[in-house]
Length: 563
Image (cartoon, rainbow, N blue to C red; front, side, top):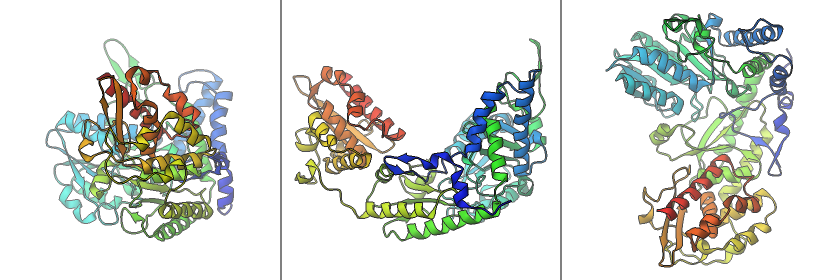
C-alpha cells in the first residue's frame, strides 16, 4: 500500500475540478454529503450497462452477477465494522431509515407506558423524531442527556438519566454540529448496567473513525454510504443477530417472505426479512466500490492528514477576532461550527457561495441543540481528506473580508435612510420599480456582483415595525425568519412591507416587492416571477434554500391578495 498522498487522493474526485460562479469549487459541506471518486461513479454506470438485473430471484447469468456484487458489498460492510455475521448487516435507504426501522420494529412492539428512551441534546432530528413518534404510540417517555462545555455528552450525568426504566439509549457517535467524539463506550457501559439497549448513530463517525461494533458492544449501529464517498440512497443498520431475529419485519412485500398464502405468511431469514422489495442494487454495488476504494488507502496516513487539516483550520478560524465557536476546544474531526456576531449565518453562506465556497448555514437538523446552546443557527465548515490547506486559506481570507467590509456602491449607496421603521407611506427601497431592478442587475455580470447587489438591497431596505412582526405575518418556508404584511386602498391597489433577519432575504424581498407593490391583484397575478428572476440572472444561482424562500415569499403574497 502506497503512503497517503492528499494530491493523489483529491485527483480521484472529478467534481473537485469544477468551477462555481466563476471560481474554483471549494467544497466544505462534507458533513452533509461527501463527493464521489471516479471508481464509484463508473461502477454505478457499469451496473446498468453490463449487469442490470434483479438480485436473488432470477435464474439467469445477469442476476447471478448482480447478486454476487450486491452480496460482496455486504461482506465488505461486515469487515468494515467487524460485525459477527453478514446477516447482521441490513441495507436501508440511509441512517434515517435505519433508525426508523429500529424504532418501529423493536420500539413499537416492545416499549410500554412508563418505559424510557434516552437521547442527547446533540442528536440529529433523525434520531429524535422517530423516537417521539414511537413514544406517542407506546406511552413511553423521552429523557435527554445534557452536554459538557466541549459539546460532548456529560459522563458525570449518565447515571442520573439512564436507570431502571430505561429501555434504549440512542446517541450519536459524533454530532454533525459539534464534531467531538462522544464517550460512547461509557454510555454503553451504563446502559448495559441497567439492561438497556443502545443504538449508535454513526453517520458522522464512519468516514473518520475505525468502527468496531464488537469492541463497542452496541446493540445497533447505523450509518449512510453517501457520507463516506458512496452513493446516496444507501444506508446500513447493524444489529446483533439475537435482536434482529426477534424483531418483526419493518415493511412487507417481495424478498422478505418465505411463503405466502391468504391464510398465512412466513418470513424470510436475516438479512432479507428487513429488505422488502427491489433494493437500490446499483447503489449497493457502487457502495461496495467506495469501500474497496477506502480499503486501498493508507488509513493511518489519511487520518493523520485529516488531523492536520483540523488543527490548521481551527487555528486559522480562531484568528478571526469576532468569530465565536459554539463550544469550547478544537473538534476531533474537521468540522467547525461558529457564528459571526453582526452577520446573519445565511448572509455569510450566500457570500461564500458567490465565490465558489460551499458551506452549510442554519440549524443543521438540530433545532433542540441550537436551543440548548442558545443560538438561532450557525455556519458549519466540514472538510474531508480531499480538501487542502490552500482552500482553508482562501475561506479564511473571504471570512475576514466579510467581517471587515461595509457594502457600498451602486444606485442605492447615496440614499439617505434613517433607522426608523418602514410604513406603507415610506419611499425609497420598497418602492423601487421593476425597471430599477433590471437596470441595477444589467451592470452585474458575474454572480458575485449580482450577489453584491442583492446584499446592498438588503442592507438599505427599511426595517419593518416590530409590532408588525407577528406569527400571522411570518413567511412559512423561509429558513431565515421573514415577515410580510399588506394594505389595500379603495382602488384595490396593494402596498407591502417586508423584513427578514438575513440581508440576503431582505434583498430578495426588495426585488420581489418591486414587481408587486402598488399594483392590483390582477396585475400581481399576471406578473411572471419565474421569468423575472431568470431575466435578472438569479434563478440559476439561487441555492435550494434561497429558491424555497423565494417561492415562500411569492406564496405569502398570493395568500394576502386572495384573503
